[in-house]
Length: 72
Image 1 (cartoon, helix red, strand yellow):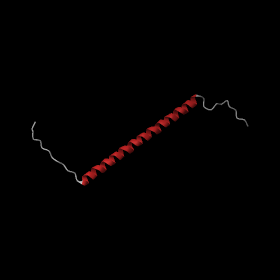
Image 2 (cartoon, one colour; image 1 turned 180 degrees about the vertical axis):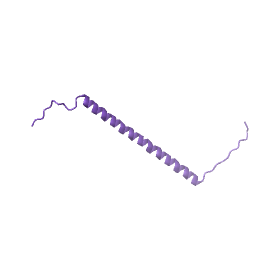
Image 3 (cartoon, one colour; image 1 turned 90 degrees about the vertical axis):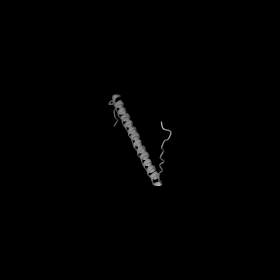
Image 4 (cartoon, one colour; image 1 turned 60 degrees about the vertical axis):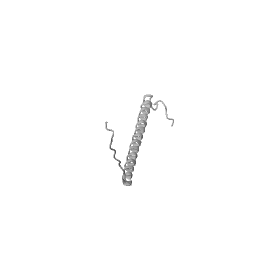
């Protein structure tokens, strides 16, 4: 290994920093809303499955009994 290493210093202008910050904010916002959408979709999917299971259980238990007579 060489004992003399070259180092280059990079400097960013205010416009560069602003551009990086804006892109980072946009990416974080996009990721947040994408994940939020996935979470809401998963919740709706679970509710729909629970509803279908409840309807199936209700039907398996006989549904509305036919032996109940309506008094006129």
